[in-house]
Length: 382
Image 1 (tube, one colour):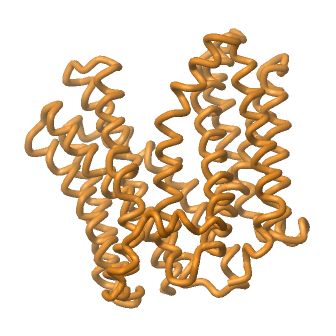
Image 2 (cartoon, helix red, strand yellow):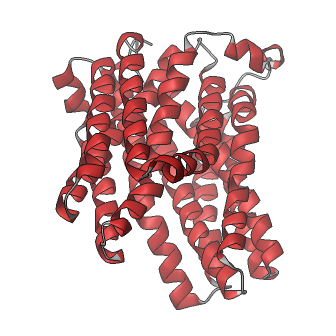
């Protein structure tokens, strides 16, 4: 197994466990009598560590090596889901969610950095596409595992299936992880967030990355509301949402070929943002479910390009040896956007109507395309 394949496999396994666990926590909390607000509060605690520790994790991964950080992540996930098994209660579910947040932070930051570090320039686009493709598969397999485990094993015993998934990831790290980069323990002088932020070249990358996160969250939160307002049934809305995942998955299979057709990663990134802007303009104008599903597929395809290309963009723009810090900072800002987006755009929708939400997002996508176009020229240079 190559080092890049190992990183992708570990991320796939760990995030399958995370997404399965998220379903389990929600259903377990409901079985214990929690209301929707309590369930939302439990799941919100998963973002504590991603917001607070993504940047430090990027630094630590470069200082102490990838194997240790990844073992911390999968170990936290396994421990988190073991707690509700031994101590089933709402309090244990809060603890599980917090530890899953630690798993998300360490595995995502370390994994994304490793894919860039371990790739040659000519293979980096393909490897980031494969990394993102594996992420799309976890979005399908993880919830299925969580749901079937709950149905066939019960609320408490289902936790053990998630523990087993994290244990599988840990076993792979212990067996093959020695081939991963060891890190540089003499990096104490580089633990400076303001120094990282002082690199103005990172700012356009942070802007386009956070805009893509905003666009994704608006779609996930407000397209179901729009579908309900159109009178669509829950199953039809589910199909519309599934077209987004299908578009994202398919475009990542062909991402390398799309880059060649576009001429560069920079141009494709800009085109994808403008394409997403057009899709968002059209969403409120969709007359029926089929048109809305087509818009969902188109936006999914655009975001399927944007997410791996912004990763590539960030890795190429960061100073040599600081990619982990930059990727950690990117995830910190993205998670802040995830927290703020639903509330902010909810206020916009309440004040000016739901169509305004989509058109404002379209404007932001246009901004992303304009920002990415002149700045990503070196995206495959390192």
